Image 1 (cartoon, helix red, strand yellow):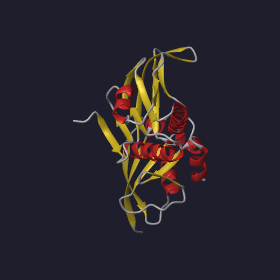
Image 2 (cartoon, rainbow, N blue to C red; image 1 turned 180 degrees about the vertical axis):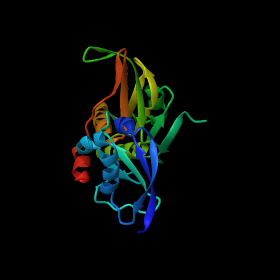
Image 3 (cartoon, one colour; image 1 turned 90 degrees about the vertical axis):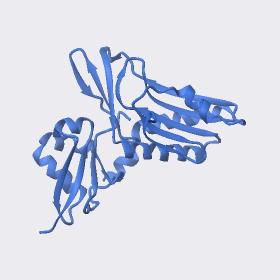
Amino acid sequence: MTSVPIRVLFFGAIRDVVGRREDSLEVPAGSTLGSVFEHYAVRFPKLKEMAASTVLALNQQFSSPAAPVADGDEVAFLPPVSGGSQYTRHIADPAGHFFAITREPIDGTAIARQLLRGEDGAFVNFEGVARNNTKGRATRFLEYECYEPMAVKMMARIGMEIAATYPIGRIAMVHRLGKLEISETSVAVVVTAPHRKPAFDAALEGINRLKKLVPVWKKEYFADGEVWVDGEWDDAVTTARA
């Protein structure tokens, strides 16, 4: 039987279950994303228990388990999201919008100053920061990882949809990866606009959608252990998975 090579990526809690970040796999011609997942679920029973909350991606696009895989495809198993240059990946839109992943500290106000136009009368800078506890359990530090090429593309998609919906000037989304100390910024959503209300509304929608659509995962480290933070996929993603 003819077989084709594919690359399989694992993130967050799934990476811990499988014990690796990626794998090279030969699959029979005509295989689907679902059959690839089943291949690993047989080897790692814990993965089968996570099937209901796992989303599959094919070549950096959310995809159904029925989607066929072909020679050289990149497959990713995504657990629920928690979601030179300082940016490891970025997209700078011609209209001035900006979307990026970084391992350096984020300065949302500095980003806003770069986005501002003469006609803007306001900017909103939302920054999510690392807090020192979860439900009373003391947190030492956080660590973030993501599916980088897909994450920055998804941020750009969300941002452009918001820019087309609200009367704003520009929007930026920047997420940090790696180790974060308490009170450091993990994510910034910055919106400039002629008036304040659209800026607030757009920033709120931006962070809400980012948290459910962008493949970023958070691990919390405590004095007595560590855990990947459970998140929740957007309904549109889970519907597409079916």
